Length: 504
Image 1 (cartoon, rainbow, N blue to C red):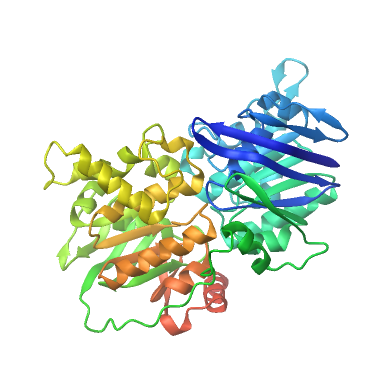
Image 2 (tube, one colour):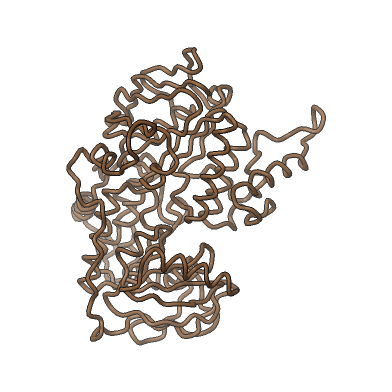
């Protein structure tokens, strides 16, 4: 696609304005970035380009002609494919069935050529993550990063002229991102254009030729990296309107934890082949990071702590007493709260309001009465919306109509109505803009100073470096190294993870 222009694109959802006369365009095969805070209109714009929702006004001009995009079929005819932020995969189908669904290769004119479809699926996946994902695995068995890779592969299978990646790196580890970038550069050389939406500014700076910035539904800036410096200090003021200056996290002072009580202890805990005799102690008010190469048992450790998966052998102690649980309900009643990695599957009731999503945990607490006062619930929800800046700030807004980052705020924010003893964070800022990310971690650190223990698994090393008192490095289900506060740095985290792999 040599020329793409979107002029004066506007869209409203009832009383909520998503886009106002947004402008976006490029010529030649480009990797064109799109950034903005949560709720700025990025995903709405992507979905309009893909024909999933219709614009209220505006025009598309593609390769010299004015074009209408009123359906996914229109977008497909124009060669536009979208890798969704909220995945479009069917859990009970296999990887290859999802990738080629609706575009199966044919053997002759009638019969599906399954082998051809499977071969092409293998080829695409091996370009992205060589040998990591079996095409015969069901989607339901994959972790969030692997599902995102399949979503990207599904878009690539359609051989688009314009590929839109909507927060496609949010669930990915660093090495996945690097491999994806290699593929993107190759696709550009082969004549494909890419719209790349991300909250990670280092990714934008590294991969994009051109950048557009949306704020409150409007195009507020354009940066041509072929003419201007690749400097995040040029981008941040456009995203925030110049009001935000806390973009660089300040590493915390070392806490004095010597006198603190141990709140959690694992004694040779095992779970299937994912956790292998894991032992550690964590003190009250400590923030502990879980590091290592992706898929080494980090998520299973978080889930075991939350009570979502059973301790098959070994012992789990909480506040000095053995804790046995096969359900998160038991953990919630003890003050152990989980922010899950897959908000769509495990964190939200998408067809319900912000209010209902925030207050439903109250019904699990034994001390709560059967009937709760609606006025109090609205007050609780309003306070949380204000504290974490959910946009739009409407208690009755249906969650599925929020941007991905605002959905994540709901998942995180619901626990702020309680006094958590432990918060388990499974990639909590995935798909969250830089300003909100900073705000959420300030809240996390405030909770820590008040005695809440935080256990953090993040795909961003920066978040671990800037927030954690200790980091456990995992390999093949074991904690193989512990890094203390003074030594937690990018170089140490990467080297510790890779060195273990080399030894293995």
